[in-house]
Amino acid sequence: MNHKAAVIGTGFIGPVHIEALQRAGVEVVGVLGSSPTKSVAAAEKLQLSRAYQSLEELLQDLRVDCVHIASPNQAHFEQASRCLKAGKHVLCEKPLAMNSAESAELVELAKQCGRAAGVNYNIRYYPLCLEAAERRRSGELGQVYHVSGSYVQDWLFHPSDFNWRVLAEHGGALRAVADIGTHWIDLITAITGLEIVSVCADLQTVMEQRERPLGGAETFSAKLDSTSKNRKSETVEIDTEDFGSILLRFRGGGRGVFHVSQVTAGRKNCLRWEIAGSRQAMSWNSEVPNELWIGHRDHPNQLLIRDPALMHARAAQFASYPAGHNEGFPDTFKQLFRDFYRSIDEDTYSTQPTFPAFADGDREIRICEAILRSARESCWVEV
Image (cartoon, rainbow, N blue to C red; front, side):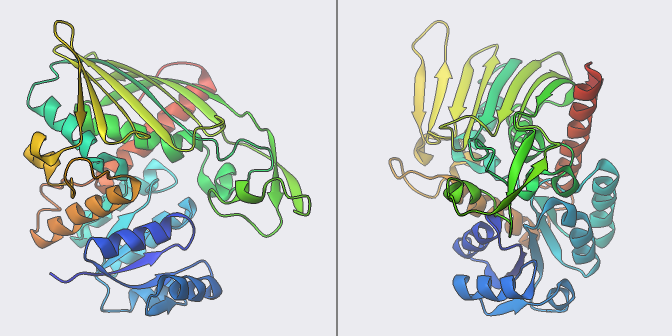
């Protein structure tokens, strides 16, 4: 099927969706920004034929069969709801909604409307993360004893670094955990197949005040001019966390621990995990995404370099290039979109979704709510 998509959002991640959609063979008809001016500017820059003036105009475009939502968090619920009701398939950035009541409603609405509904947990689609999941499914890993890891960045390292995400009213009460920690959680549950049943969390707001630039700042862009002496700003109180450490308990007895930070100098976008199994261990680092470490007790350890010829079939189909030709962050979007649109073509999205679906987004929000409650009450909380 010749799919045609529209993208909502012109900040950091919207253009990433557009580029990946085009690489995946999906025509992008147009883009909708937070204002008509931003829509026009983005359409011109990205060479798209349509700059939508409103969501109503986008939904009335009969050429569009799928909408990608890459807008600020608080807009996701309304936009996803309206797109589904208009008969469009939806692929939404995380978090799916602002709370579990909204996300549960979206899960049911997608079922009622009979549309494909996915959440952009793109990190699942690094080929060697898919390979790790296949090794677990095949029994090579054995029983999962425990997992550990982190997701750390430095784009909010300075008090002068600012983005709408740091304010709870725009991004939600959880920030670092909800923004990047949910990627780690989704990835680990996808690889291990385990269900998180309880959490114990400690959160830290390192910067209790930040300087908000007059005129706003896009994600990752504030640090580019954070040292400018001519930058006009206002001081605002911060009510979200810069750092979080979380203990996990999985159904069946497994344990886990991870931390997230957006103020770790020098770490631009580093996700790491290590899984200890009864037969072997595995470890992966997003800054070296084409290497999977495999640990053994009784014979030499291994380092698998991403090579479709040496990978399980399910993982190999998401490795587009031969060994030695590295694949990275932009490719994960392309591969997720390939999986999503193929499920539409094969009509399997409602019965056997292979992509992260709205139900996965709902689960992540429930985990986040448990993490927030745990941090506030200083105790273990069931999900």
